[in-house]
Image (tube, rainbow, N blue to C red; front, side, top):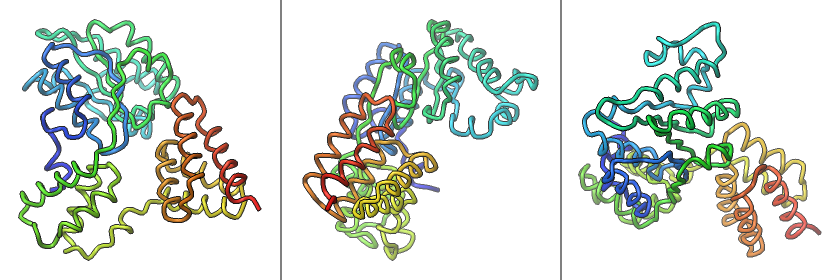
Length: 333
């Protein structure tokens, strides 16, 4: 069994590193109420686990009856086929209607059903950034119509993909990257539970995994299981290499050569084809800069861009501006 599933938090008290958010959700459970929620933050920080734990504590053993989860990425990848084959939606699926019309009917169906012994039910959109603009416009009206009988929860790594009318109707809760100390402690607990301490993982190995995970607890647990299974013969740096990371490194090398066109093309490819957000791209670029060219001016450029992306409508404009600033401010001869 994968350790990321075996050690997934089931209670709010098990959520680590998100004290402020956990307190808000615990208060909702205590008062048995819940607003529409916009859950954002990097991968592996406990977003989905915290929401499911909240719903379980609120509805107890009947939580599945009052919860509908839409895996948005799969939904928009497979389209009408997903709705037609899923037994939850097949009874209301109409072949003669468009995908968006069928999705709207499915959401309407569940949002309109008021529980007998509860005041509202919950609809969760995982990977909500995959929602198309048309789908979001439809959801906006459904949220207004059924606010008394249903609460909507949008879980996404970045909120910029959602239209302002949806964001303004939700309470935003941000899950920050998990600190290295918390990740280290969690890995030690898992190692003790699995009986693998101190061999094959030494304290230095655990510390390396914690740092390499970069705030992603799920990634840290996965790395720990891989190292344990391979008796620590696997190179963590290779495990941590990603296609988007390689593209960002190549883009930075293009900046060094003052090739702005190539750098922009590589960065846009990483964002569009690999689906990484502008914030995730900055993290990749920050890691490359630390390894390849640790310059204080570059740190300042990254910080400025990170700040401007908070309210950006088009992140590509600011990312392209960052490329130009790096080339002209650092590498121009």
